[in-house]
Image (cartoon, rainbow, N blue to C red; front, side, top):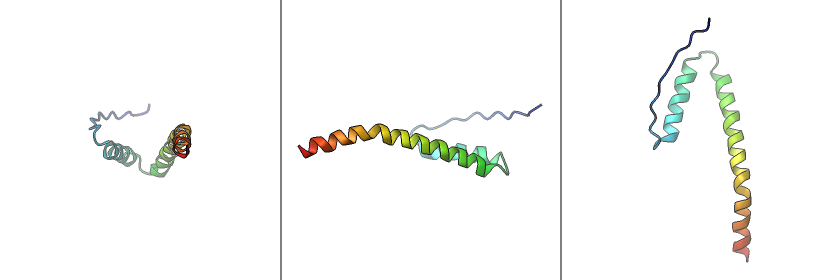
Length: 70
């Protein structure tokens, strides 16, 4: 049977980057030998999220540029 380690975390949402870094560090340090795989999966998810945000912002940026040209 798998052993489940529960971790309760309180986050200061006014410091999002620092808090996310701390949580990632906590998780990868709990999984020796799997850090690279975990970080690669996180990297992929972040890349996908950034691409979606950039795509969503493109039409808005194009409208701003069009209005400025007029």
